[in-house]
Image (cartoon, rainbow, N blue to C red; front, top):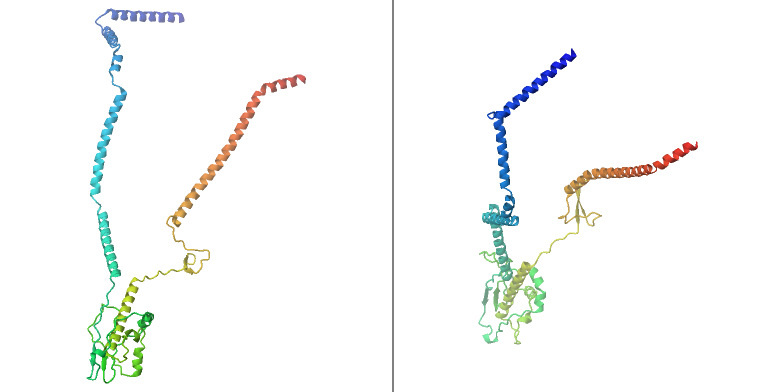
Length: 384
């Protein structure tokens, strides 16, 4: 049975091969078949491609020679880029100018305030210089009204002493401070029965601008010898300064009027000099050697004449404050621990690397001496 099945299968295979061979021969012999047409078409395409390739031989060299230089192309592109960049720069500059022309309202307000401040500073400086150059003028009071009653027995005009000009003597300068503190009352003096002189001395006000229309008060002083002596003892008055060259000692109206008018003029000059000195005087700045300290623990302010190791810091412009110091300290604390761990790990890695290198070296030495050791071992075994 087995032999029969083998024979049947071989016959079937031969028949199938014969049928396939016959079909293929029929297709090849048939020129109108689809397979034949596809085969012919493919052959024509290959032939056409071969011909095209043969015609294109050498075109690569000609195209390479006709192609422009790469350096020239790069140079042209660079020029184009520079031209475009210059155009963009011009546009940016124009926009910046336009933006600068449109000022911020806040900046305009600050500029106006600055101009106003400059004008005010100039005005105040002019006023200060004006006050220094021309101090306040003391209004000259009207001459003291002098009422005189002279009888027919008075001296003739030739025998009267002429008024001599005022002379500033060192004696007057010494008594300026005394005259400034003395009161200046209104004085009315009456002399001998034969000649009566009434002199009114008006008290000058320290502020010349304060004027009033109130009537001046008059203080009558009786003609006593002691009062006359007191008047003659006023500091700053020297009778010798007002005596003429004549040896006559007879009193006259001109002597008395010059005495009182000179006293008024002297007080006026003293007041003017005092005002000018007060105007030019500069008050010194108050400096204190004490150190103020605020204790944050007790929340109390303390003042020390001499600092006990604690002083007040004055210039801390470039130094960090407490908040910045605390932040810096916290950052250092945060970075210190990772750095310490990194250092420890690096040390451990270094130690392990040293051990590995040592073991590697020992292993290499062992491999080199392995043959020698094996021979020694065989010798020992043989000797035993």
